[in-house]
Image (tube, rainbow, N blue to C red; front, side, top):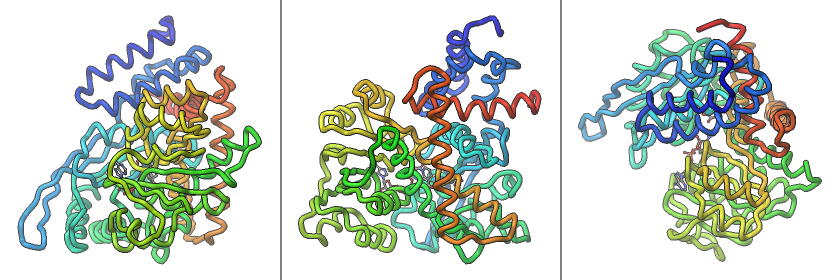
Length: 450
Ligand SMILES: NC(=O)C1=CN([C@@H]2O[C@H](COP(=O)(O)OP(=O)(O)OC[C@H]3O[C@@H](n4cnc5c(N)ncnc54)[C@H](O)[C@@H]3O)[C@@H](O)[C@H]2O)C=CC1
Ligand SMILES: O=C(O)CCC(=O)C(=O)O
């Protein structure tokens, strides 16, 4: 097999991925991007193609699908489907979040778990890759219903978890409330206080300071590094984000702290523009306390406007941070951003830009930071939470945040170095995929055919 050139090799691997995983377009998309980046890597380092390493890398180690029955407040029984894809344990226990969205499918969970392989490797913190969730919609559900759902979900999932086995965390619609309910049920079933089995816990019972903020803060740290390569900084730049959840809110917070003018954000109902700069206290009150929609922001704030038509990316900006969901920034949005002079696009979400959009941005010379590098601060701080749990320590906020900043600087530097080494300086996609791959591939070679 080694005599085959790198390009034919990755094409053959991709064809087999398509054959084996029909009807999973997001997984195909994520694999295709990585395989494309691996061509120059395998050309220069052919040893990483030995023993069908790449073929093994694109096949999850384990996929668990399970029934989640639960009873609503009116006594009606519902049945949802739960997933956990344990993709790679080459570098440590499976690690990655849980997502509760009604349209969740196995293909979505697989793409997210696959991305997590390279992201987690980039952190350098000894974590493997997984992802999970359920096709459950928590919107409009009472706390008691969400609790019963989480308890039922964990009743099956717990047998697949453990601080040395698989350590979930939050993701879309899974935040502090859900992690609390999931941990409570795990503890009851396992009959032990195994703090390191979940991350994103409450600060008073094993959580890490700065985990809530970490993904958004980390994305902005990454942007600062991207700007810094050309002697620029965030101070005074106009920023637009999508989403108004965990990642977005704390990206707004850090960007504002660094002097940026953050003028727009969105949710699944539309977007809000506030030329005076977003009022973060109001946003947090609406999103974190009231769990409300963004139109109420415009009602409460003079000068702000809400729109349910068009896109947040229609708003002119220097920096765009897609922080909502996959494939939300499409070609037409990228064309609009370029027309309005965007300099940097960095992904707070996982794979929010479609391949067409990425092509438009790169063609126009826009600096583009892929999620597996730009949003790695969340999972990195989760790994730091696991360290604190193992040592029975609790660091201060400033210590945890300082470590996050170091990790993000390191990821940026590793991406730049790998991109230069494999021939395309400034290509953060190549840099992130190559640097992440090399760490995983080295471990896989050392560990034999498993
Ligand atoms: N929470 C974390 O630590 C990490 C999250 N991510 C990724 O970041 C993204 C957001 O996750 P979270 O902020 O945790 O979730 P969240 O549930 O806290 O917030 C998601 C936000 O996106 C909005 N949204 C969903 N679909 C949308 C659409 N089509 N258009 C506009 N807005 C939309 C929702 O209204 C909500 O405001 C996801 O891609 C997730 O996988 C990545 C790394 C870590
Ligand atoms: O902190 C974690 O383990 C989850 C983070 C995550 O799901 C992600 O990086 O997309």
